[in-house]
Image (cartoon, rainbow, N blue to C red; front, top):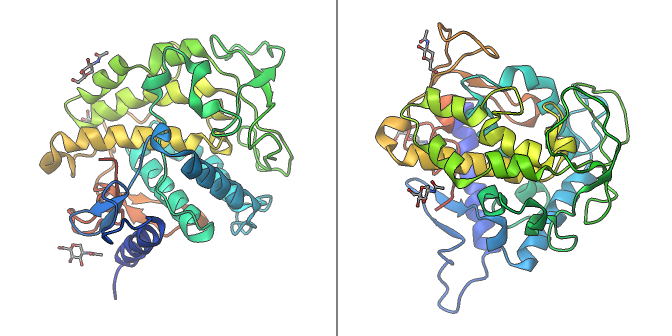
Length: 354
Ligand SMILES: *[C@@H]1O[C@H](CO)[C@@H](O)[C@H](O)[C@H]1NC(C)=O
Ligand SMILES: *[C@@H]1O[C@H](CO)[C@@H](O)[C@H](O)[C@H]1NC(C)=O
Ligand SMILES: *[C@@H]1O[C@H](CO)[C@@H](O)[C@H](O)[C@H]1NC(C)=O
């Protein structure tokens, strides 16, 4: 009997193949646009692009697909009873697993798989033909507020309205908003889960609180370079996640806290649609780091099983299971080490950033 991993790989790769054939407007000579899709080592990869590389039509299609997921009924009600939509299903699983997927050795692998499942849902359930875009925040580090991501028509809308500081000792430095967003395609969006760990029924707006200071300090090219310069996975992953205080958050926290509001919520952050573009960029940097020494880095894995676990172990290994709850079958870290296909012999992914 084929393993679940093998079944999934054929599913994902087949989906990519069909999707890209249908998606790509075929040039006159009938060849597939090499910019959209290309041969991976074992499948036809789809190419994830920076938000600015998409045409306005492609941007609109992506946003519409996300809105489509927000309109599709939940499938995870058995374990997340107050999930209303397919979009909520993803947020709910992240809320449930928060304490087992951050500051652990499988942080990057878990989020890599989570994004691939989200991309698959956009493509298969919402007829989206492209790949998951990413947000290269280094392009905006010096002028966060001017980022094209916040365009009300061709982006995700802008800052939350100013809200009084709540006096929390955990307030993000330099935060400028805090309330509901006031424009863009998600202005009327309702969140049905969160904030924080709450899975109780609710109806909330999307909040943002841009922090130009966070973006400038943690989302810049020098920080990315320093992250890429780490010599083994254990250090790479630690530097990506940074510390748990706002003065040294790493590039992971940089993206989250520069948007703030929902995105700054450790549990409920996938309620922010830009979460997926931010994490795609982290995944891109992870793949870039792996690609610098693929033979070694397709199998380099370490880091604690338990949140903030001691460096004395136990550590995750390649056979460690990655659990997506009701979203998708479990796979192992090994199955997720190669984004471009099956160099590992068990790969389930099929996309690239190159
Ligand atoms: C980051 O590294 C790239 C490639 O090595 C280099 O071109 C760039 O100048 C570096 N940027 C910073 C800010 O260090
Ligand atoms: C766990 O991994 C870390 C690197 O992330 C390493 O420093 C440590 O020695 C490992 N611990 C064990 C018990 O292998
Ligand atoms: C992945 O590669 C292994 C080893 O080459 C092969 O046995 C397996 O069938 C491949 N899986 C898929 C889904 O292509």
